[in-house]
Length: 96
Image (cartoon, rainbow, N blue to C red; front, side, top):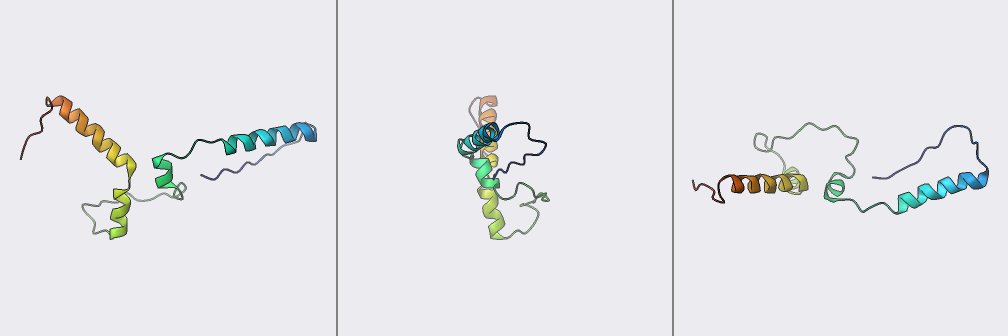
């Protein structure tokens, strides 16, 4: 996410004091933590409202399926559900 600062209002500080605020904002901007997997995956789509896709119902293009495959949240949730299921069934999954 690219950050921009908009500072409005009357300036009640000297130029030197105001510059200190700007330097602090620049420091915060430069020392941000690196983006996590979700932020990297969603970069560029922060401001877009999209209809949810139904990959099992709709005939989607292969590019769209690739996006589903790269979704880090989905696989983390699958892993959590699998661990819950395993704990709930004594470590055994039924064979079908």
